[in-house]
Image (cartoon, rainbow, N blue to C red; front, side, top):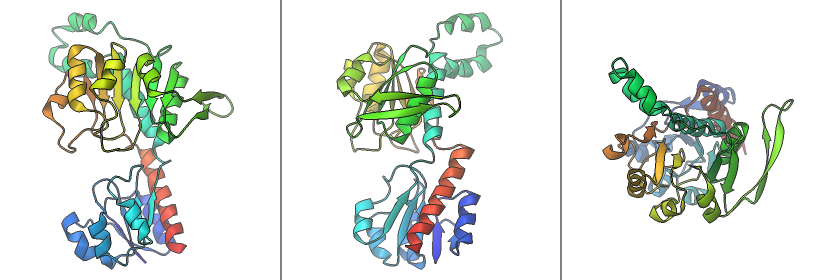
Amino acid sequence: MKILVNDGIEPIGKQLLEAAGFTVDTHKIEQADLPSRLNEYDAICVRSATKVRKDLIDACPNLKAIGRGGVGLDNIDVEYAKSKGIAVINTPAASSRSVGELAMAHMLSLSRFLYQSNREMPQNGDTQFNDLKKAYAKGIELEGKTMGIVGFGRIGQETAKCALGMGMDVLAVDPYVSEVTLAIGPSALGFEVDITTVNMEDMLADADYISLHIPSVGKPILGAEEFAKMKDGVIIINCSRGGTIDEDALLEALNSGKVAAAGLDVFDNEPTPRKDILSHPRISLTPHIGASTEEAQNKIGQELAEKMIAALNA
């Protein structure tokens, strides 16, 4: 059987697929050409770039499996594919820690003005060193602060582990999760913490930091109404999906001081985020790299290959 890996895969994933007897083609086929080409293959593996929608599925009756290297399945018509007997696979566990650590990195950067210092030091550090030192001398520590987490699946839980390890309190919101026991630290030295989820209203009122870890739901989860209910000076982190925050409302909250700062890894209109978001002095930015660590990519490649092998051999 032939598998098209259209958005790349780590070597370990390719090796596992080939060792299982599959032919793996890693030469990318452009989206416009897929309807006429994909029927040459038995399965396709994608990341976020390639879209596998109803029209493409209909054009490829030979398709037996669709694999997505990553958590979200926004770019695949999942239910329609399943209705056609096509297996749909993703890798929800592989990148959880990487995304959680990036959320914490943004929190630390914002709390100690690292993002601003790194913008200004190369330009003015030699002539205004003491002025910059004074300007950025009012950082805050994470210990003792409260972190609100919207979405308490695998990634939200990994983010909570990081926060708890730094001495933070955690308020988690998730309509599908009521209570979770988290193991913090190495098994020999670690400890367990029971987290009971709370309602959105309580979290918004009490959190010093709020981090989103949810899939795209077709509308913003945080908008003007939610910002109004937050503490003054709250810090917002989004390493989930663009569109989960109303960017106009976020900018208004930043400019009014309601939100002290924001850390964004995802944006509306990727890969061309709006300029006023990219240039805002109180937004820490990364280009959608939540899952982009060596460890996560290797885990994604391995998990995707193992699930694809199981699906095609079923």
